[in-house]
Length: 439
Ligand code: SAM
Ligand code: SF4
Image (cartoon, rainbow, N blue to C red; front, side, top):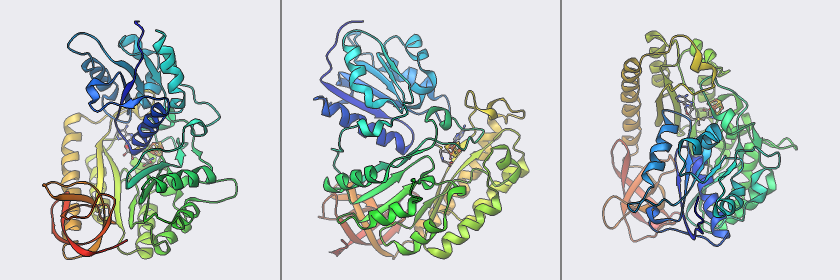
C-alpha cells in the first residue's frame, strides 16, 4: 500500500439521522486534525463511507460505491468504511475490496485520526471495538453551524426485534450524561442552532441515574435562551411515559410531532417480531397523545412481508393506518438481516407479494399525507428557514408539523418567520411570508 498524506476529506452518510449526526462529528474530528472538507467530494484525499446495514443489499451497495471511487488515472483516495456495515462485516471488507484502507465501527470513530495515521504509514487499520468508555468524551467540541442540528442522546438497543440488526451493530442501550448533552446543546445554539432534534434508537428510553427521563431533558432545553424548537426521534411505544405525553401539552418549544413506529397492525406478527406491544396498547398511546396535544402530527414505520405475514394480517396493517390517520409514515419491505432470528424463520414472503403490499400501503399513507397537508391551507404558522427553495428567490424550511414549506422571502436562512400556507402538495407546502418575525 503506498504512502499517502490526506489533506482534504469527504464524509458520505447513508441511512438514519444518527448516521448524519455521526458523519458531522467525524467531519469535525478531521477538521480538528487540520484537514479540510473537500469542495468536490470526488476530489477528496480521504473518503469516509458512513454506511447503513438496516435493509436491502446495503453491504453490496458499499462495495459498488468503493469501486466507483477509483479515478480515471487508476488511483483511489484513502477510503474509510464506517457505520453499521463496517461493524457487521469487519475484516471481510478489505478482503473483498482491497482499496479500503480503514474500517471503523459506529462506537469507535473517535479513533479515526489514529486510524488515518496508520493508513498513512501504509498499514490497513481496523477498529470495530465497542469500548466501555463512550466515544463522546473523546470527540472535539461541536463546530458545525446551521439553524437545525441533531444531537444524539441515546444509542444502541436492547429490544432485539427479531428482524433488526441494530442491537448487533450499535450495541447495548446507553444514555449519554445530562451535563454532556446540555453542554453540546449550548454549543450548537451558540453556533446558530434554533432547532435541536434529540436522537436515539429508542430516544424516549433516555434515562439517567437520578431517575430523570427524556421529558426532563426537554424541559431543560426549553430553558436554553436562543433555542426555538425541540424535536426527538425515534421513540418506542413501550417507553412512552406520562411525563413525555404531558410535555407535548406543556412545553411550548416542543414541536407537535411524534414518530412512533408500530411496524404491523397484526398482534400475531407483532409478537413474532418481539415488539412487546400490541395494536391496542399502541392505539391507546395515540389517544393519550392526541388528548394532550390535539394538533399533533403522527408518523410511523411499517414493515410489510415479515415472515409468515398473511394477506389478512397485512390488511390489519392497513386498518391500523386508517385508525391512526398519519401525517406521514415510512414503510419498508421486510429484508432478512444476516444473523437475526427472523432471517431463518419459515414462511419468507415472496418479493412480488411484498411489492404489491408495499404499493397498497404506500398509496394509503400518501393519501393521508396529502389530506394532512391540504388541511394546512389557510393556516398561519411559523417556518424555520433552513435552505434554498425550489425556485429562484425562494427559501424553504419546516412547519412545526415537519412539513416542508417553500416561500418567496427576503428573510435569511436561520430566520423563523410567520407564514400563511397557500397551497399544498403531497410532499411540500407553499407559503406566503407574513411580514412579522415569529421569533
Ligand atoms: N428503534 C426504532 C424502532 O424501534 O422503531 C427504529 C430503528 S430502525 C433504524 C428504523 C426502521 O427500519 C424500523 O422502525 C423498521 O421499520 C425498519 N427496519 C428495521 N429492520 C428492518 C428489516 N430487517 N427489514 C425492513 N425494515 C426494517
Ligand atoms: Fe431495531 Fe427494534 Fe431496537 Fe428499533 S427497537 S432499533 S426496530 S431492535
